[in-house]
Picture 1 (cartoon, protein in one colour):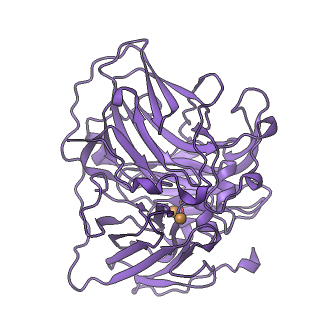
Picture 2 (cartoon, rainbow, N blue to C red):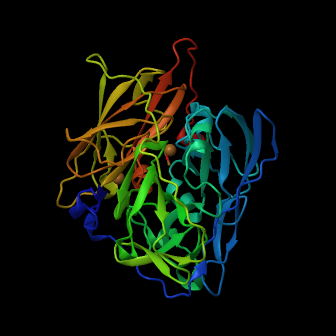
Picture 3 (cartoon, rainbow, N blue to C red):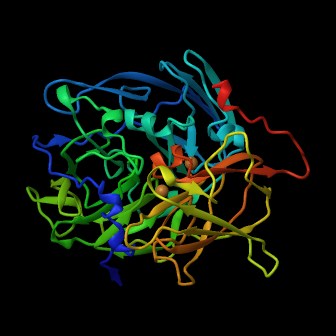
Amino acid sequence: KVYTDYFFYEPAFNTHDGGYIPLEEPNVAQQKLKVPELLTPDKETDTDMYYTVTSQAGEAQIMPGQATKTWGYNQSLLGKTILFKRGKNIHVTVKNELPELTTYHWHGLNVPGDIDGGCHTPVYPGESKVLNFKCDQPAATLWLHAHPCPSTAEQVWHGLATAVVVKDEHEATLPIPRNYGVDDIPVILQDRRFHEDNQWDYKADYDPDGVQGPTAMINGTVNPYFDVTTQKVRLRLLDGANRREWRLHFSDDLEFTQIAGDGSLLTHPVKFTHLMITCAERQEIVVDFGQYKPGDEVVLYSDDVPIMHFRIHEFAEDNNVIPDTLFEMNTPKVTENTPVRKVVMSGMDEEVALDGKKFNMERIDAKQTMGNCEIWEVTNTNDCENGMVHPFHMHGCQFEVLDRDGHAPYPNETGLKDTIGVNPDETVRFKAWFDHPGVFMYHCHIIEHEDGGMMAQIQVDDPSHPQEFHLTKMDDL
Ligand code: C2O
Ligand code: CU
Ligand code: CU
């Protein structure tokens, strides 16, 4: 079966409060897609990996003419891809060379609250700290981004986002592309408006329902092309936009196969011609260019706007078949006694709220015991006429989707997820459990909604090691 629709509630795509900015085809020559290098570990042993991640300001040549002032990790814009091997002890020195405080949030990583990098763990300008944790979760595409309260959106807009790849032994055995930079690449989807002298101006573009620009920027490249030198290419799609959903399809309605979601491989591969990704989600797809010949070009569109070009070169035949089963879910069982927790995302613009409240760093909104599975029932109370799809995200865990308004989840929502688009007037249920203690945020990942207060925090206690969690106060920042 090949799916040809976007699943999500279509009238909600563009209508949000009239502020929606459609993409436009950029009026610049095609440029080679920037594929981020892999970050070189400072040191790696059989058991440990050491990295240094520095937030810094710089300039990036994105448009012809003047360079754009940007922020990034270990480079001027975005960052190098950070690789974690499952089972290893990871040590990351995070440094802040920016003029303001930031945090280092590992979106999708299962780590204790003090490593997670939410708003309670600021790193001040000129300072650094070392994060020590064990990587113990399935192969996946995660990401690192800034998360200071309440300027996450602006810092991400400046460029503080980069891909994180977790590798494990199971994924390594599958006949799927994994030659990084050649047939396995991150594709970070963002959009920007270039003002005078090619500069970004977050304040001028501000919209409380999420900042957008008309120009697609992929891995920091405008109007990119990628040289295809293998029959199959694995794209690790990451919606790194502040608020834009991407409705993706290729020229010729070329079919492609999704193999992974946010936090793991899908249980089974799913074939598409059209695929929507909402903010902060990841979708790994394998595109088979077998029907094309050298000199051909395949175009990736979002809506009707070309956003990326694939230039076909000679390649060797690849007859590998993606297996029908990619991943076994081994998650806690739901029983009649499984507690149900209700969460409500409401409002638009400045009115956004979570459970009727604005986020408060000093307030714990919920508690869950480490290791206990609960059903989370997340409702978007926006109305269908004018509402938005709110992508709900949880820190500190990966969840399993149960249903949407009582119906089966979309076919590509198997496997582990940490972010899920909730349609207007819809309730999504999933089961969630935490493997680590700490205070974790959960929120809408339209980043201006998060900064605008559509966020709450949960305290996860480990009964065998009770501890007090330090909450940073807004006034201390
Ligand atoms: Cu992508 Cu609160 O995070
Ligand atoms: Cu997160
Ligand atoms: Cu939202």
